[in-house]
Length: 404
Image (cartoon, rainbow, N blue to C red; front, top):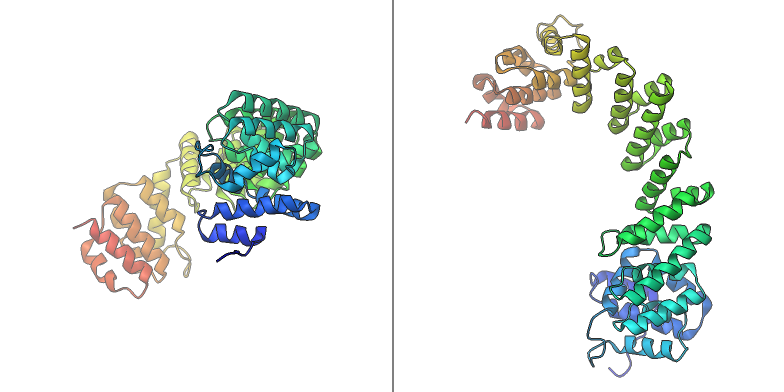
Protein backbone atom coordinates (compact mmCIF):
# COMPACT_ATOMS: atom_id res chain seq x y z
CA UNK A 1 0.00 0.00 0.00
CA UNK A 2 1.56 3.30 -1.11
CA UNK A 3 -0.76 5.65 0.75
CA UNK A 4 -2.43 4.70 4.03
CA UNK A 5 -5.68 6.27 5.17
CA UNK A 6 -4.99 9.22 7.42
CA UNK A 7 -7.13 8.74 10.49
CA UNK A 8 -8.84 11.53 12.38
CA UNK A 9 -8.08 11.92 16.08
CA UNK A 10 -11.39 10.23 16.93
CA UNK A 11 -10.61 7.27 14.65
CA UNK A 12 -7.06 7.02 16.00
CA UNK A 13 -8.34 7.08 19.56
CA UNK A 14 -10.81 4.30 18.75
CA UNK A 15 -7.99 2.19 17.28
CA UNK A 16 -5.86 2.90 20.36
CA UNK A 17 -8.65 1.74 22.67
CA UNK A 18 -9.46 -1.35 20.62
CA UNK A 19 -5.78 -2.33 20.65
CA UNK A 20 -5.72 -1.91 24.44
CA UNK A 21 -3.11 0.80 24.22
CA UNK A 22 -0.80 -0.81 21.67
CA UNK A 23 -1.56 1.62 18.82
CA UNK A 24 -0.64 4.81 20.65
CA UNK A 25 1.59 5.65 17.68
CA UNK A 26 -1.47 6.08 15.45
CA UNK A 27 -2.98 8.55 17.91
CA UNK A 28 0.22 10.60 18.23
CA UNK A 29 0.58 10.79 14.45
CA UNK A 30 -3.02 11.98 14.14
CA UNK A 31 -2.40 14.68 16.75
CA UNK A 32 0.68 15.92 14.91
CA UNK A 33 -1.27 16.10 11.63
CA UNK A 34 -4.01 18.14 13.28
CA UNK A 35 -1.43 20.53 14.73
CA UNK A 36 0.19 20.99 11.31
CA UNK A 37 -3.19 21.86 9.80
CA UNK A 38 -3.36 24.97 11.96
CA UNK A 39 -7.14 24.62 12.30
CA UNK A 40 -7.86 26.17 15.70
CA UNK A 41 -11.19 24.38 16.11
CA UNK A 42 -9.68 20.96 15.32
CA UNK A 43 -6.74 21.61 17.62
CA UNK A 44 -9.08 22.60 20.47
CA UNK A 45 -11.21 19.48 19.87
CA UNK A 46 -8.09 17.27 19.88
CA UNK A 47 -6.91 18.76 23.17
CA UNK A 48 -10.37 18.23 24.68
CA UNK A 49 -10.31 14.59 23.57
CA UNK A 50 -6.92 13.67 25.01
CA UNK A 51 -7.02 15.75 28.20
CA UNK A 52 -10.45 14.45 29.21
CA UNK A 53 -8.75 11.31 30.55
CA UNK A 54 -5.54 11.81 32.57
CA UNK A 55 -4.50 8.22 31.90
CA UNK A 56 -4.46 8.96 28.16
CA UNK A 57 -2.07 11.88 28.66
CA UNK A 58 0.17 9.55 30.67
CA UNK A 59 0.04 6.97 27.87
CA UNK A 60 1.20 9.57 25.34
CA UNK A 61 4.03 10.55 27.69
CA UNK A 62 5.16 6.94 28.13
CA UNK A 63 5.17 6.40 24.37
CA UNK A 64 7.29 9.49 23.72
CA UNK A 65 9.85 8.99 26.48
CA UNK A 66 12.10 6.04 25.44
CA UNK A 67 15.79 6.65 26.10
CA UNK A 68 16.71 5.72 22.52
CA UNK A 69 15.52 9.08 21.16
CA UNK A 70 18.73 9.46 19.12
CA UNK A 71 18.29 6.04 17.50
CA UNK A 72 16.92 5.39 14.01
CA UNK A 73 14.21 3.36 15.75
CA UNK A 74 12.76 6.40 17.51
CA UNK A 75 9.33 7.17 15.94
CA UNK A 76 9.70 9.52 12.93
CA UNK A 77 6.69 11.57 14.07
CA UNK A 78 8.50 12.41 17.31
CA UNK A 79 11.72 13.36 15.50
CA UNK A 80 9.57 15.66 13.38
CA UNK A 81 7.99 17.13 16.53
CA UNK A 82 11.41 18.00 17.93
CA UNK A 83 12.55 19.62 14.68
CA UNK A 84 9.41 21.73 14.37
CA UNK A 85 9.85 22.89 17.99
CA UNK A 86 13.49 23.88 17.44
CA UNK A 87 12.60 25.75 14.24
CA UNK A 88 9.79 27.65 15.97
CA UNK A 89 7.10 26.01 13.82
CA UNK A 90 5.44 23.92 16.52
CA UNK A 91 1.81 24.59 17.26
CA UNK A 92 0.21 24.02 20.69
CA UNK A 93 -0.35 20.27 20.20
CA UNK A 94 3.13 19.62 18.84
CA UNK A 95 4.62 21.62 21.72
CA UNK A 96 2.67 19.59 24.27
CA UNK A 97 3.82 16.32 22.69
CA UNK A 98 7.39 17.60 22.52
CA UNK A 99 7.25 18.11 26.28
CA UNK A 100 7.40 14.30 26.53
CA UNK A 101 10.25 13.83 24.04
CA UNK A 102 13.07 11.50 25.04
CA UNK A 103 15.65 14.31 24.75
CA UNK A 104 15.66 16.40 27.93
CA UNK A 105 16.74 19.51 26.00
CA UNK A 106 13.64 19.21 23.82
CA UNK A 107 11.44 18.79 26.88
CA UNK A 108 13.02 21.85 28.52
CA UNK A 109 12.43 23.93 25.38
CA UNK A 110 8.80 22.76 25.18
CA UNK A 111 8.19 23.62 28.84
CA UNK A 112 9.64 27.11 28.32
CA UNK A 113 7.42 27.67 25.28
CA UNK A 114 4.26 26.51 27.08
CA UNK A 115 5.00 28.76 30.04
CA UNK A 116 5.67 31.76 27.80
CA UNK A 117 2.03 31.66 26.66
CA UNK A 118 0.25 29.40 29.17
CA UNK A 119 -3.01 27.69 28.20
CA UNK A 120 -5.19 25.45 30.38
CA UNK A 121 -5.31 22.73 27.71
CA UNK A 122 -1.53 22.31 27.92
CA UNK A 123 -1.47 22.17 31.71
CA UNK A 124 -1.61 18.34 31.99
CA UNK A 125 1.61 18.12 29.96
CA UNK A 126 3.28 20.70 32.20
CA UNK A 127 2.20 18.76 35.27
CA UNK A 128 3.84 15.63 33.89
CA UNK A 129 7.11 17.53 33.65
CA UNK A 130 6.91 18.41 37.33
CA UNK A 131 7.76 14.73 37.87
CA UNK A 132 10.63 14.77 35.34
CA UNK A 133 13.92 13.22 36.45
CA UNK A 134 15.91 16.00 34.74
CA UNK A 135 16.11 18.89 37.20
CA UNK A 136 16.24 21.73 34.61
CA UNK A 137 12.95 20.40 33.22
CA UNK A 138 11.19 19.69 36.51
CA UNK A 139 12.36 22.90 38.19
CA UNK A 140 11.07 25.07 35.34
CA UNK A 141 7.75 23.22 35.22
CA UNK A 142 7.28 23.39 38.99
CA UNK A 143 7.99 27.10 39.22
CA UNK A 144 5.66 27.87 36.34
CA UNK A 145 2.79 25.69 37.55
CA UNK A 146 2.96 27.06 41.10
CA UNK A 147 2.64 30.58 39.73
CA UNK A 148 -0.31 29.63 37.53
CA UNK A 149 -2.16 27.84 40.34
CA UNK A 150 -1.81 30.69 42.80
CA UNK A 151 -2.33 33.57 40.36
CA UNK A 152 -5.24 32.08 38.37
CA UNK A 153 -6.89 29.29 40.40
CA UNK A 154 -10.23 29.74 38.65
CA UNK A 155 -8.61 28.83 35.33
CA UNK A 156 -6.02 26.26 36.32
CA UNK A 157 -7.04 24.54 39.55
CA UNK A 158 -9.58 22.11 38.08
CA UNK A 159 -7.43 20.77 35.21
CA UNK A 160 -4.50 20.61 37.63
CA UNK A 161 -6.53 18.59 40.13
CA UNK A 162 -7.67 16.08 37.51
CA UNK A 163 -4.11 15.37 36.37
CA UNK A 164 -2.15 15.67 39.63
CA UNK A 165 -4.48 13.39 41.54
CA UNK A 166 -3.86 10.83 38.80
CA UNK A 167 -0.09 11.33 39.15
CA UNK A 168 0.04 11.26 42.95
CA UNK A 169 1.53 7.73 43.04
CA UNK A 170 4.05 8.47 40.32
CA UNK A 171 7.67 8.87 41.36
CA UNK A 172 8.26 12.54 42.28
CA UNK A 173 4.51 13.14 42.06
CA UNK A 174 4.15 14.17 45.69
CA UNK A 175 5.46 17.70 45.14
CA UNK A 176 2.70 18.54 42.70
CA UNK A 177 0.00 17.18 45.00
CA UNK A 178 1.29 19.34 47.86
CA UNK A 179 1.16 22.41 45.64
CA UNK A 180 -2.35 21.48 44.57
CA UNK A 181 -3.51 21.40 48.19
CA UNK A 182 -1.72 24.66 48.96
CA UNK A 183 -3.41 26.41 46.04
CA UNK A 184 -6.82 24.92 46.90
CA UNK A 185 -6.65 26.09 50.53
CA UNK A 186 -6.13 29.66 49.28
CA UNK A 187 -8.63 29.49 46.41
CA UNK A 188 -11.99 31.32 46.47
CA UNK A 189 -14.98 29.24 47.57
CA UNK A 190 -16.58 29.41 44.11
CA UNK A 191 -13.53 27.70 42.61
CA UNK A 192 -13.89 24.78 45.00
CA UNK A 193 -17.61 24.66 44.25
CA UNK A 194 -16.66 24.23 40.60
CA UNK A 195 -14.43 21.30 41.57
CA UNK A 196 -17.30 19.71 43.51
CA UNK A 197 -19.30 19.55 40.28
CA UNK A 198 -16.57 17.67 38.42
CA UNK A 199 -17.39 14.32 36.83
CA UNK A 200 -14.04 13.08 38.12
CA UNK A 201 -14.65 11.35 41.47
CA UNK A 202 -11.11 11.99 42.71
CA UNK A 203 -11.57 15.72 42.12
CA UNK A 204 -14.94 15.80 43.93
CA UNK A 205 -13.44 13.98 46.90
CA UNK A 206 -10.45 16.34 46.92
CA UNK A 207 -12.73 19.40 46.88
CA UNK A 208 -14.80 18.09 49.78
CA UNK A 209 -11.68 17.35 51.81
CA UNK A 210 -10.37 20.87 51.29
CA UNK A 211 -13.72 22.53 52.01
CA UNK A 212 -14.29 20.56 55.22
CA UNK A 213 -10.79 21.36 56.46
CA UNK A 214 -11.33 25.03 55.64
CA UNK A 215 -14.69 24.97 57.38
CA UNK A 216 -16.53 26.29 54.32
CA UNK A 217 -19.52 23.96 54.56
CA UNK A 218 -22.35 24.54 56.99
CA UNK A 219 -23.79 21.69 59.01
CA UNK A 220 -26.95 21.41 56.93
CA UNK A 221 -24.87 21.26 53.74
CA UNK A 222 -22.78 18.42 55.16
CA UNK A 223 -25.91 16.56 56.20
CA UNK A 224 -27.37 16.96 52.72
CA UNK A 225 -24.19 15.57 51.13
CA UNK A 226 -24.02 12.69 53.58
CA UNK A 227 -27.63 11.75 52.96
CA UNK A 228 -27.95 12.19 49.21
CA UNK A 229 -24.62 12.04 47.40
CA UNK A 230 -24.14 9.09 45.05
CA UNK A 231 -20.46 8.57 45.96
CA UNK A 232 -19.82 6.47 49.08
CA UNK A 233 -16.54 8.27 49.83
CA UNK A 234 -18.18 11.70 49.69
CA UNK A 235 -21.06 10.45 51.87
CA UNK A 236 -18.68 8.94 54.41
CA UNK A 237 -16.45 12.02 54.66
CA UNK A 238 -19.40 14.39 54.79
CA UNK A 239 -21.06 12.20 57.43
CA UNK A 240 -17.92 12.19 59.57
CA UNK A 241 -17.57 15.96 59.29
CA UNK A 242 -21.26 16.54 60.01
CA UNK A 243 -21.18 14.25 63.05
CA UNK A 244 -18.11 16.01 64.46
CA UNK A 245 -19.69 19.43 63.97
CA UNK A 246 -22.97 18.26 65.49
CA UNK A 247 -21.18 16.87 68.55
CA UNK A 248 -19.18 20.07 69.05
CA UNK A 249 -22.29 22.22 68.72
CA UNK A 250 -24.61 19.83 70.57
CA UNK A 251 -26.98 19.51 67.59
CA UNK A 252 -28.60 16.20 68.50
CA UNK A 253 -31.34 16.81 65.93
CA UNK A 254 -28.85 16.57 63.08
CA UNK A 255 -27.31 13.43 64.55
CA UNK A 256 -30.74 11.81 64.75
CA UNK A 257 -31.44 12.82 61.16
CA UNK A 258 -28.24 11.12 60.01
CA UNK A 259 -28.87 8.09 62.22
CA UNK A 260 -31.92 7.12 60.16
CA UNK A 261 -30.14 7.59 56.82
CA UNK A 262 -30.21 4.52 54.58
CA UNK A 263 -26.42 4.54 54.18
CA UNK A 264 -24.68 2.57 56.94
CA UNK A 265 -21.39 4.48 56.70
CA UNK A 266 -23.30 7.66 57.56
CA UNK A 267 -25.41 6.07 60.29
CA UNK A 268 -22.31 4.77 62.07
CA UNK A 269 -20.81 8.28 62.26
CA UNK A 270 -24.09 9.66 63.60
CA UNK A 271 -24.54 6.94 66.19
CA UNK A 272 -20.96 7.35 67.37
CA UNK A 273 -21.76 11.03 67.85
CA UNK A 274 -24.91 10.21 69.83
CA UNK A 275 -22.86 7.92 72.03
CA UNK A 276 -20.38 10.70 72.75
CA UNK A 277 -23.24 12.93 73.83
CA UNK A 278 -24.58 10.21 76.14
CA UNK A 279 -27.68 9.14 74.18
CA UNK A 280 -26.93 5.48 74.70
CA UNK A 281 -30.54 4.29 74.96
CA UNK A 282 -31.19 5.32 71.35
CA UNK A 283 -28.28 3.17 70.23
CA UNK A 284 -29.27 0.18 72.40
CA UNK A 285 -32.57 0.15 70.52
CA UNK A 286 -30.62 -0.93 67.43
CA UNK A 287 -29.49 -4.32 68.75
CA UNK A 288 -31.47 -5.94 65.93
CA UNK A 289 -30.19 -3.63 63.17
CA UNK A 290 -29.41 -5.03 59.72
CA UNK A 291 -25.79 -3.79 59.92
CA UNK A 292 -23.24 -5.83 61.86
CA UNK A 293 -21.23 -2.69 62.71
CA UNK A 294 -24.28 -0.94 64.11
CA UNK A 295 -25.22 -4.02 66.11
CA UNK A 296 -21.70 -3.95 67.57
CA UNK A 297 -22.17 -0.28 68.51
CA UNK A 298 -25.51 -1.17 70.11
CA UNK A 299 -23.94 -3.99 72.16
CA UNK A 300 -21.23 -1.63 73.37
CA UNK A 301 -23.88 0.93 74.33
CA UNK A 302 -25.81 -1.81 76.14
CA UNK A 303 -22.69 -2.78 78.09
CA UNK A 304 -22.14 0.84 79.11
CA UNK A 305 -25.70 1.11 80.39
CA UNK A 306 -25.44 -2.15 82.33
CA UNK A 307 -27.75 -4.08 80.00
CA UNK A 308 -27.00 -7.73 79.10
CA UNK A 309 -27.22 -7.74 75.29
CA UNK A 310 -26.72 -11.50 75.06
CA UNK A 311 -29.66 -12.12 77.38
CA UNK A 312 -31.75 -9.75 75.25
CA UNK A 313 -30.91 -11.72 72.09
CA UNK A 314 -31.75 -15.02 73.81
CA UNK A 315 -35.08 -13.63 74.94
CA UNK A 316 -35.92 -12.25 71.48
CA UNK A 317 -35.05 -15.51 69.70
CA UNK A 318 -36.97 -17.57 72.27
CA UNK A 319 -40.05 -15.37 71.87
CA UNK A 320 -40.17 -16.05 68.14
CA UNK A 321 -39.26 -19.71 68.45
CA UNK A 322 -41.92 -20.34 71.09
CA UNK A 323 -44.59 -18.45 69.15
CA UNK A 324 -45.15 -15.85 71.83
CA UNK A 325 -44.82 -13.07 69.28
CA UNK A 326 -47.87 -11.99 67.28
CA UNK A 327 -48.84 -14.54 64.64
CA UNK A 328 -47.47 -13.89 61.17
CA UNK A 329 -44.58 -11.78 62.44
CA UNK A 330 -41.22 -12.91 61.02
CA UNK A 331 -38.21 -12.86 63.35
CA UNK A 332 -35.86 -9.97 62.70
CA UNK A 333 -32.84 -11.17 60.75
CA UNK A 334 -30.79 -8.72 62.80
CA UNK A 335 -31.88 -10.54 65.96
CA UNK A 336 -30.72 -13.88 64.56
CA UNK A 337 -27.40 -12.41 63.38
CA UNK A 338 -26.84 -10.60 66.67
CA UNK A 339 -27.65 -13.79 68.58
CA UNK A 340 -24.95 -15.63 66.60
CA UNK A 341 -22.45 -12.82 67.21
CA UNK A 342 -22.86 -12.77 70.98
CA UNK A 343 -23.99 -16.23 72.11
CA UNK A 344 -22.22 -19.55 72.82
CA UNK A 345 -22.48 -23.02 71.31
CA UNK A 346 -24.80 -24.23 74.06
CA UNK A 347 -27.30 -21.50 73.10
CA UNK A 348 -27.72 -23.02 69.64
CA UNK A 349 -30.83 -25.12 70.42
CA UNK A 350 -32.82 -21.91 70.86
CA UNK A 351 -32.62 -21.53 67.06
CA UNK A 352 -33.79 -25.05 66.20
CA UNK A 353 -37.51 -24.13 65.94
CA UNK A 354 -36.64 -21.47 63.35
CA UNK A 355 -35.35 -24.14 60.96
CA UNK A 356 -38.99 -24.90 60.18
CA UNK A 357 -40.12 -21.30 59.83
CA UNK A 358 -42.25 -20.52 56.75
CA UNK A 359 -39.87 -17.73 55.65
CA UNK A 360 -36.93 -19.02 53.58
CA UNK A 361 -34.79 -16.09 54.69
CA UNK A 362 -35.39 -16.95 58.34
CA UNK A 363 -34.51 -20.62 57.76
CA UNK A 364 -31.32 -19.65 55.91
CA UNK A 365 -30.30 -17.12 58.57
CA UNK A 366 -30.93 -19.66 61.33
CA UNK A 367 -28.68 -22.18 59.56
CA UNK A 368 -25.99 -19.53 59.15
CA UNK A 369 -26.21 -18.58 62.83
CA UNK A 370 -25.94 -22.22 63.90
CA UNK A 371 -22.89 -22.65 61.69
CA UNK A 372 -21.23 -19.63 63.35
CA UNK A 373 -22.04 -21.08 66.79
CA UNK A 374 -20.77 -24.52 65.72
CA UNK A 375 -24.11 -25.94 66.84
CA UNK A 376 -25.62 -27.32 63.62
CA UNK A 377 -28.08 -30.18 64.32
CA UNK A 378 -27.18 -32.65 61.56
CA UNK A 379 -30.46 -34.54 61.80
CA UNK A 380 -32.45 -31.32 61.25
CA UNK A 381 -30.14 -29.70 58.70
CA UNK A 382 -29.68 -32.69 56.35
CA UNK A 383 -33.28 -32.70 55.05
CA UNK A 384 -32.87 -28.99 54.30
CA UNK A 385 -30.49 -29.88 51.48
CA UNK A 386 -33.72 -30.57 49.53
CA UNK A 387 -35.40 -27.34 50.62
CA UNK A 388 -37.46 -25.66 47.86
CA UNK A 389 -35.48 -22.46 48.43
CA UNK A 390 -32.02 -22.38 46.83
CA UNK A 391 -30.91 -19.97 49.50
CA UNK A 392 -31.81 -22.43 52.24
CA UNK A 393 -30.23 -25.35 50.36
CA UNK A 394 -26.97 -23.44 49.96
CA UNK A 395 -27.02 -22.49 53.65
CA UNK A 396 -27.56 -26.16 54.52
CA UNK A 397 -24.56 -27.22 52.41
CA UNK A 398 -22.35 -24.68 54.22
CA UNK A 399 -23.72 -25.61 57.63
CA UNK A 400 -23.24 -29.34 57.12
CA UNK A 401 -19.77 -28.71 55.74
CA UNK A 402 -18.71 -27.57 59.20
CA UNK A 403 -19.87 -30.89 60.60
CA UNK A 404 -17.93 -33.04 58.15
